[in-house]
Image 1 (cartoon, rainbow, N blue to C red):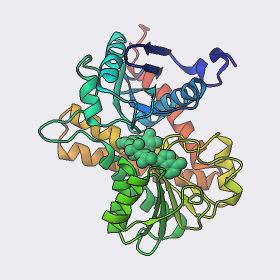
Image 2: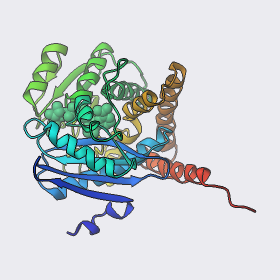
Image 3: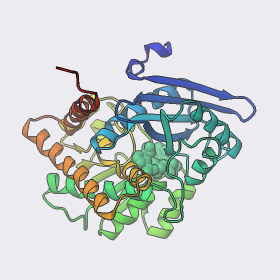
Image 4: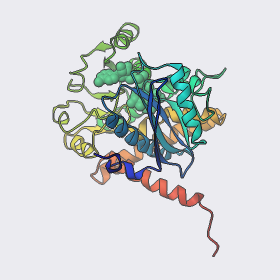
Amino acid sequence: MSIFDHCAYSQHEQVHFVSDKSTGLNAIIAVHDTRLGPAVGGCRIHAYPSSQDALSDALRLSQAMTYKNVLAGLPFGGGKSVIIADPQTEKTSEMLEVFGTYIDQLGGKYIAAEDSGTSPSDMAHIAKTTQHVAGLSTEHSDGDPSPATARGVLVSIQTAAEHKLGRRQLEGLSVVVQGLGHVGFELAKLLMREGAIVYGSDANQENLNRAAQELEVHPVDVNSCLSMPCDILAPCALGGVLNEHNIPNLAMKIVAGAANNQLATPQDAIRLADRGILYCPDFLINSGGILDIYHRRTNASANVILDAEKSFLDRLTVVLETAARHSTTPYQVASHMAEQLREMDTEALLPKQAA
Ligand code: NAD
């Protein structure tokens, strides 16, 4: 298939393929929409099996960032970058610095931040060659947006539990966290504090051991974690984990996690609803980190931060209630809301035509 035939390609403003032989850099920068502001989105480093897989991921992730940012009420568009490399063995500071020069050439259209496979220290390397990078450590913060993302997901899980199970308290509920990296580990910690019984899996044995030893998370095998009966599944690894093949075997009541693009296709939202599983759209509930980045960039006051967090959580309640009232899925309601807000805000920003 040609890249121009990719189903998500036509909706993007720009897609850049960048490569540097001397550092082994192979990357894609996808800019989905900059009508509301610069395209802000994480830089993911992953050992993709093929460049086609990397492209699919970049395109889907950047579109999800547009939805996430507009639903969170941020003056940002959506974009994402992916570097095709194993973050454990192939990532180097030289590679990141060269990558920064390519981001710089876009003149601020795309602003990079952390994602799976990158950390605040990686952002510091990118920042050596471009100013268009967020999530840097300062004297007040270590720069990592993951704890804020985890906090947003926790409150969303509580909201979903109230909606689906009639109780906000998580005490005694079983939660499976798939992926115990930056966000998953923080989320597991918060869930334990709430009295939930937390199970976790990770493809990386070191991360699994750390969560088991430091938090007493119950380890679950990577291959069986999705089919394990539980109250709540929190996907916090990579995308596309819920699909037509595994949804018939799922045995949880709620899915609410941080991972971007948890559904392989939009139809999977209907498949989950048909099984009686409440799916909280990822782009609606995982914006705690990007909100945190925005608030740090603008030196927001504590009150502004509280108001913003409250309003994005209120949106989940509106989405869940609207979906229930209209017998549709939260995914469809949230996607529709994002599209509407995107158009509405854009018009408001455009200069008024003379009468
Ligand atoms: P991370 O790389 O720190 O953690 C991901 C973890 O998932 C790793 O420990 C990895 O080993 C594990 N993993 C990979 N495949 C797995 C599998 N099949 N089963 C179990 N574990 C697996 O990434 P992160 O920053 O914690 O982000 C996690 C997800 O949340 C990503 O999809 C990311 O895009 C999304 N997200 C992150 C943030 C943030 O603030 N970091 C914000 C919004 C969304």
